[in-house]
Amino acid sequence: MAERFQPPLSPPAPPPQHAVAIEDQQYQNQVLVKQNETETQLANFSAGTYVVQIPKDLIYRVPPPENAYFVKNHQIAPQNNTKIRPCGCFSCCCIIILVVIIVAMAIIVGSFFAAFSNPKDPTFSIQRVLVKNSSSTTHTPNPVYDITLKAHNPNSRLDISYKEGGTASLSFKQNEIASGSYPVFDQGSDDSEVFDINLKEKTKVLPLEIKKSIKNDKPKVHVTFGLKMNFPTRLKFGILYKKMVFQVTCKVTVDSLAKGTRLLSQQCDTKRL
Image: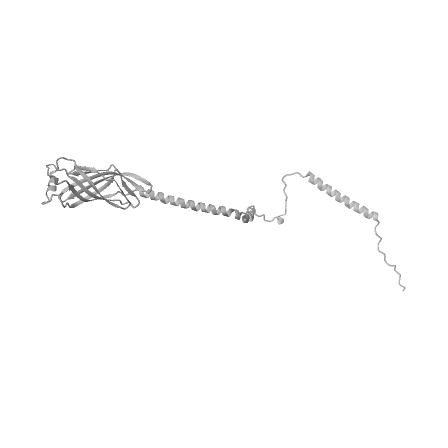
């Protein structure tokens, strides 16, 4: 059987040019229509609150707002450190100085109140009793009693100044027989001072026991006297001071008022007025 002859296939003919131009024009028209629609929608858009619904599987965890604050501080910190450090050091120095001043003032005030709230009273003791002008040949001798005392300041922080205006008196059997003034002197803290008081006879007639004790050394006549002293003082702590008035009463017994007088007993008590 004879084979049939098939002519070669030819490529399809290209579309005419005017058809392509028509399709391009249609596409451009569609694009312009969509742009106009978008511009119209944007022109009709008004501000307000809109609810946008998002599928649950598209919702992700939102970081808390304070994270942004921390990130911002960490970013700014390196820049600000160079400026803040000098101010911080100065503030620390000021705080330390202020604390030191406060502590020093507290110590001073505490020491002041500790010293002045309950100061200790000075203590006294009689060391010696002498009678001068006792060899008078007149019937009415006028002796002068010279009494030596020792004052002790028991305060470890307070100085005592004994001011003018102090008085002293000597009595025998509760009758005042001689008087004088208390001396003026300063006494340091925890210090002792020995001083003399001269008391002049006030009575014209001496008690019989005193006459016998002055004139007779054998047998010796014991005599007991009472000594009272009132004096103003100033307790000092640095530039601070406190005024106080004290009264000291003493009782002393001697073996004789003649030469070689010896103390048999003595006791002094101090109180505040």
